[in-house]
Length: 178
Image (cartoon, rainbow, N blue to C red; front, side, top):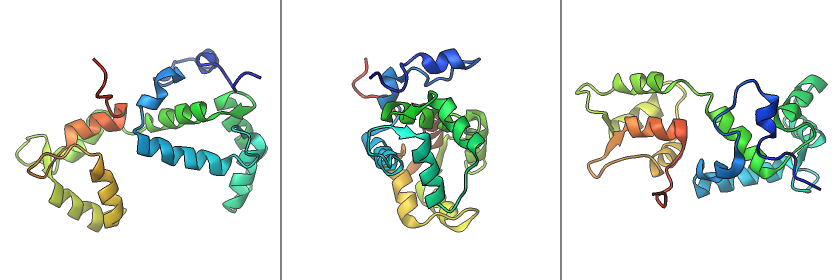
């Protein structure tokens, strides 16, 4: 049996083509660690252990979280994918599409630039850690370490927020590409 959908099926169902509708390069969007985390999440949702997330898998997942999903929600989620089941590649594709729905790049850069008094494109890693752990929706040190692990930080401890915004919006670059 063919997979849930071929790479172009999502394009035919939508009025506009999402950037990640073509699944052939989806594994370049996430680094290996993120791909493995998403695979773990996929496996948790795949209650039937058949390599696909079905409508029933989604229902069970919501119920395990104490939610009672209505049929329209489940139908909408499945229809966004392919009409009956979601394989791992499509799961990554849908996840990437959701990530693309973040704030526009200029809004993210402008927010960081408020911390960049010298207008250099950099913010001190220590200052950013302090803000992330003490203000707003506070992160713990482990969460900040996770962010910083793959963040563009130079040897002087400066966080490159322009490059970070690019990564947020477009994913990590493949060093092997020419």
